[in-house]
Structure formats: structure tokens, C-alpha cells
Length: 526
Ligand code: SIN
Image (cartoon, rainbow, N blue to C red; front, side):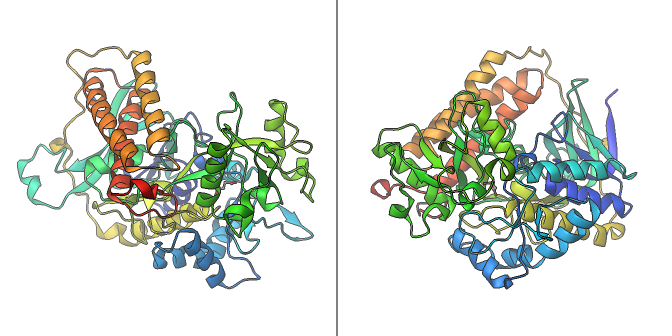
């Protein structure tokens, strides 16, 4: 017997966006199910966010914050979305994060100890030292666990959205508007695939940066939501704008551990291995220039000096107690023998954030009926071509509330639109092959190298064309393999990585104009 669940709203993804939507919906009486492919709530990008959450400060006007976001995004941001994120920042941070889940943001002399990061003109980043995301996530889960209308399922991986007309056995469904009605989900423990039916689906699956060789994201962040939404027919936009964080720890065992931009906010300067501080050469804003500029400058320095990394010198410039302000970074670097209050930190850029994603309106609605997209998986227009630091947690929070409010507003007006017997059950392959991990690993590595070398910080048309043909071939092979093999997390991630990588490369090839995080070397422009 095939297992299935029915719920009012299915939320896929447990970071700040999904958690916020779950909180608002469940507290307002909506039966909500939140699923995550992780073992617990630590496998999200939110959990890894060190720096903090930007919030309009008491000292400034909304226009100051708005202008910083627009400048960072090369002015292709959607102004209404930028205004929404800024104008709601104080209200939602207070209501949800401070009053409800009680995040203990750092204070100094009775006021919030605000940090500054690249391209911010003001100290406006609320933080819990360098563990902001981790604490937010912990506080959320303490709170969410007590909500009676909310069911949380870890170790459950969404494979595909259940969507009409695609999954309908009724031939006449073709003539009605396409819509989503839930998802096919792998229960990692039983290894069975269940159908979860819901009136609304909220995708909050995060970004895609782990399709790159070096990434600050958890390993499973491969654009599952983007791939699923694309297959279901939702509109996708701006995927060429993959942001590279300038400073991840360079060490063979460190797995691109993030060195927060707040470190440069506290005075740290980048230098090459010859000991030259180089950022002023590239930007009048120096080390606090927008991320895309800093990442490209580091790349140029590495090429010019034939080096694998540059150095981040905090010890010579910090006016703070380094160990107290950055306890996580301090301990992590110490583990590799680097005392950051004494010596510079070896760093390299790493893929960090997808500024584009599934197209979303101001209420989180995608182009596919009943499908909402919030957080990094969405392209709301807030970030334009390059995201301003620490605006992502804020965007997730604001769109988490907005999507939930929209569902609440219309919920009782809407009927259940699906007839369960009309919807295809999962089809297991006739002769299911066992998964060969060596094949999965090899294909995944090929995708990661292709993205890093051909669709990375500096792109050329030639490299992108090569990436496209390699990825098309790989995707074709992976899909065949997927159709015959037992379904596991790794094969789901592999199939989605191939799909997402191809979408990024196609977007980059289509857009010949260098802007923000998308940079095509001009000599190769056609
Ligand atoms: C950081 O702490 O540098 C990361 C914050 C962000 O990406 O917004």
C-alpha cells in the first residue's frame, strides 16, 4: 500500500524562510507540514550564516538602506521588493525574531551591537557574534516544536512537485490552468516514496552554490527547489547571478569554511602573499567594496601572482577582542593551527549565494498556481545582480510572513482542487538497480569542476559553451541512470545538480552583459 499524507500547506525547507512561514501558518490554525532532507535543522544555509541580519537602524532613513541594496545589485533590483524588505525589517525582526522566538542579539551598553559589512553605508547588521544563523535556527526550532498544527519531518526529501496536468490521469485536466498540489517525497528511512497532497506548497529549499567545487553552503545545497519548480513549469529568472563570497578559509581540510564579511567590517584587510594590501587598487571602497568586486579582485591577484590564495589580515587592524567577537571563526581556524589574532588568515572566494531563482511576486507567489517560493530559492528582485551582505536572512523572514499572510487571507475561500484517484502513484523501476556510489561521485565532481572552471567568477563565452555541451551530455546520462536506480538522496541531488547547473550556464550564455556577480571577459563577448 502506498503511503500518503494530506495537509493544508506543505513547506519544503527548514531555514529562516520556511520556519517563519510555518510559524505564522500554524499559529493561525492552518495544518502545516514542514519537511527537510536534513537529519535535523542544522543542515541549512541559515544555520551557517555567521554575519547577521541587516535591519533598518534607528539612525537612518529607509532610503539609505534601499540605496545600498540597489548599488550592490547594480540597479537591476525590483524597487517594490527592495522597499518591501527594508520597510518591514524593523517590524518583522521585532515581532518574530525578538518578541516571539527570542533571539538574543548582541548588545553593547544597552543598545544592539550593530555590525557593518561590505557595501553597507551604515552599521545596521544585527548579530549574535559570528553565530547569528545558528542561534536563529535553534530558537525557531525550540518554538516550532511546540506548535500543535505543525508536523515536522526530517529525513524526507522532495523529489518532484505533484503538478497538474503533468501528474494527472485525467486527459481533460490539460485544458485547465496548471497548478501544484503537493510533492513526491522520499522517506529516507523506509526508502519508500510517498505523496504529500496539499492545497498550497511553499518551496523554501535554499540556493544552489554546492554545484560549485568550492562553496560555503552545506553539501546538499544544489538547487533542488529550482530544479523541481523548473520541471513543473514555473518561471525561473536571473540564475546567472551566482554570488561568490570573497573569503572562505583556504585549507585542504576546511571545506570552504566561511570567514564572515563582518571580519572586514572590523577592519581586516586583504593582502597578497607578497604582503601588499591590494583592495584600494581595485575600488575606492577598499576592503568593504561589494562582494562581486572583492571576489574578482582576489581572483586577479591570485592569477597575477600565481597563487592559490590571498591573506586576510585581521590581527594588525582589529580594535576589538577578536576571540570574543568571532568565537566560531577563532576556534575553527585554530583547529587548523591558524591563530587569527596573531597571523593573517589564508582565504579564497567560494560560491555562496544564488541571487536569482524561481520567479516570485511580493507575496511569494510563483508563476505556477498554488506554488509559493521564499528565501534563496526565490527570485524576488531584492538582490538584483549582486546581493548586499546580510540581506538574505531578512528577505527570508519578510517573504516568510508575506507568503503565509497571503495564504491565510485566501484560505477559506478556496476549495480542495484535486481528486486523489486522478493522480499518478510513484512508478518504481521494473528492475531496480542498486546505486553505485562511485558513479554518483564521479558525475557530481564533473559538474562541480565544470561550474567552477567554466561558469565561475570570471566567465567567457567559450568556457560557457563548453560547459553547456558537457552538462547536456552529463544530464542525459544521469537521467537514464536515475530512471533505473533505487532512489536515494544522492541520486536526487545528482539529478537536480545537473539540471540546476545547466540552467545557470544557459542563463549566463543568454546574458552577454557583465553585471554584478555575472562577469564575462569582454574580449570573448560575441
Ligand atoms: C558573512 O557573514 O559574510 C555572510 C553573510 C551573508 O552572506 O550575508
